[in-house]
Image (cartoon, rainbow, N blue to C red):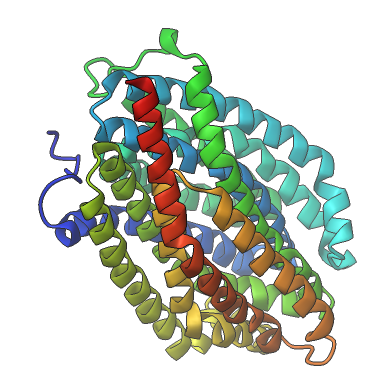
Length: 456
């Protein structure tokens, strides 16, 4: 086996998970760092209100990316099942289908985003003094969607085989280029908000090109070719069946922030800026846990494909330990250094810093609770189960936060009480997920056994 590929089916689960998860975590850290660099550059050297304009689009951008990013989860599980079962043809069909499907979906997202950008930001009550900048940023940002979708699918194919290092390398290259272009466009050329967005589009295109080159180059381990790219019906069905509920779940999670962001917007542009600064801190906490969760999904997918259900259980508990511990450590570090860290993004506004600190205290201090929910979601997804958790998280996260924004926020109009809705909602979802976890897996295994009997 290639040294880049981790053998997920043999050896110590914890050791193999660490070998695979560490590059995944580093990838998410780099993504957060490069995104934070964008915010720092535009916040320090952009025009007044530039950071608030970019921050006001965050929730909507995450909503779109999260929904269609669910396809990547479908690709990961489908490809990991094929590889774990030793079905090389099935893996090949999945990989070629994923590339074309992601490109088509990316184009759809781009067109949709261009059409609804302004109406959505108006509906979210983005303050008028930053609205035009937010619309400009969002419309430019949408141009990178096809590239982002293609890169995500290619990275999912690599990770499904146990290679988490190559996507990290490509991100390092494109991310470093993003920082350089941000400095060039914002500091030197004074393009302000447009400069940040254009830099993102160019570097997303670079990452997609690198990923495609790696999969399709001659003598590649993947042995892929552009003339074999097509949509294989059965693979599209599997990817969508797994990926669509996963995407809906992620979208609901992102959409649940829309009523909260509307509440933040009502507090003024300084609150928006402080909230945007704090997002960079809790993002690194959540992205770390989600990265390890993706590792759990890949490991579970390969083990399920190989029929090793005893090892699947070990993957669950090892993942739980890693995810919860990482959430607690990083979250508490952010809390301990909250003022200094938020000030990195808003050095000239003490009021904005105070708003940001409120969010950090409410979210990062209890972020580890979300780690339990992430583990259960990731494990079920590795089994090819996506619908139950989509329903539970949709009701528990989206519905609960909408009610919270309508009932609690009017009485306590500050970011601390607003974002206490996070840990409360997580707890409700964890209880529900714990109840359905084992029955759903038993049902899935029963269906597989029945299918094998019917085929034989």
